[in-house]
Length: 371
Image (cartoon, rainbow, N blue to C red; front, top):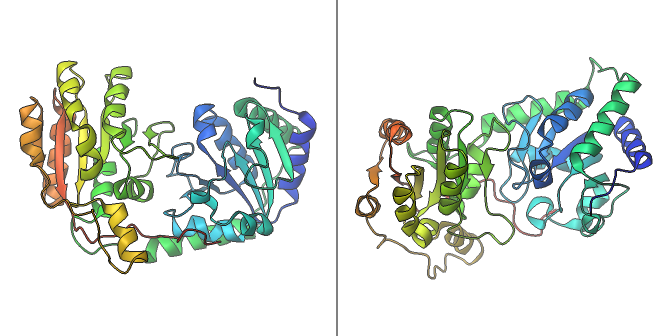
């Protein structure tokens, strides 16, 4: 059962944030579940604190906002991970502190003071030692915090050294991060998708490399428009989920960012999409392999490749057409832009097959157990 937030704990959280020299906000999936988007943005802007998210929390804070650093973790933004290691206090909202986000738990809690805000008391202290715990509905807790801060009449400093350092770090990594040089690299095709799609479009993902590339290179501008299977990481989830999203919001464009391995598991949902007149776009990042497993085998197992080659993948154009949908293969960015625009206007599902280099890795890549 939900409990009312403890006012005393919120006061302690505010004191800790105001006394911190290098505070940061970590927003998790609980912000999305609790529809606390506006409250999160208000807190960040009131205190001028940069915001990182977990992968599950992607879409809780607009990623074109000056205070946004994007996702942290194993495949998080380099600047987000770097600044997380330099912060001295974190306001963690609606997150379970998974090892995919924070790496080594002991090292994480040594570095900074933790304020943990969550609706579920079982999450408090489960993975990380917490100095201040705020248990209760996240939206209600943040609203109380906002009201208290407004009453304190917090003044924004013109000489915010931490924020200046944050912006310099952000600019450095966004200018210097090396990406695959090919025209159809993961970064370029996902940035093209973002460029063409309206901000209100809903995106789901499958599970694999394409999922992590989407986390890195597809900025979510309108909160609550990005959905992915995390935790157990269920392959095949994204396509049926996209059809469900289209049923819920038929007037909004819906795209499933997919990989060939995951799409193979539920491609028969094309029948449902066509039969129920729920046209979605399948943005199929096709590297003819189980890419994430292949990357781990290349990186950690001396290229001992087992069970990851899918060079005998079916023809996805013919599969789409056999269900009464349409298929388009895009082998250049111009072709990709045209294909997305065709899909947005189509009254049937559109599978866009996008071949990419099977050797392309998801980077950055922080090895498991790394602080």
